[in-house]
Image 1 (cartoon, rainbow, N blue to C red):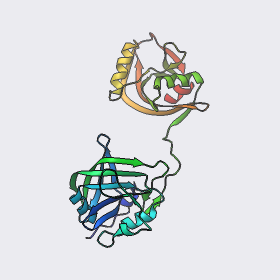
Image 2: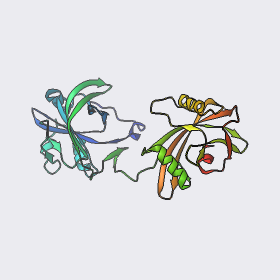
Image 3: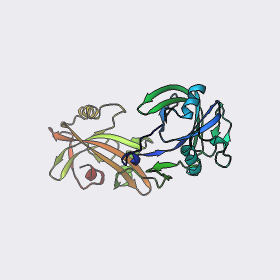
Image 4: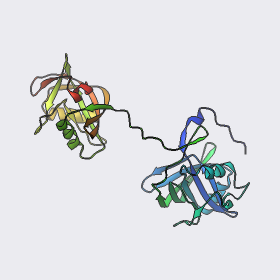
Length: 295
């Protein structure tokens, strides 16, 4: 079978690598696969994409089961052998110095030790897509090893996980009361998602004081998940009896509020607004910590 050589651009995709185990008339087999991903939580479904004509495909079509063994960074040898030879060329699983297996819980296909994840799957769907065949397996047993780090693949080379990359956010050092205010609103959520309206006049911003606190902010609401941000904000503005007209254009402000070692991540969808009334409104200089970063 002739396979197209990937172009330079195609090699810039970064993936994890898994070892797909199967069994057939010639015994157990193993192959390396980049294109492996979970596609459902309930039930847990895993899709794998393999070449038509492979021994693994024939085995899975016959037995209706397979194992997904997500490689750890210590398993470059296993991956190189699993991906460098076909089941027609050699009985890869018989290489005792390369592959170590354990007995599965729910299927009959052997699983590989030393992986970050081992998932036993029953085949529920098969579909040809492009030059590959998609096989979807329903997970019937799964386990993980949190002492293992996954193996990554990029431009023909292996990599491990590096330092965690913090999402790009504007850091705002603020006072303790302001931070506590936003943390209380977040109620333990990793990111507090807000929709606010910014009304400016010269070097001042229209603000409102929150009940039972001394905190002054631009008017904002916390829309429930799935709700239209602008429409929820408009209802909040009407309820607060603020004479503000909200425009359609918006910007995103991603902040991490910090006081000492305490932090709270906040996303603001900011809409421009026009003030149609002075009632219930006050103005504040833009130099204030959080407000300055929203303006």
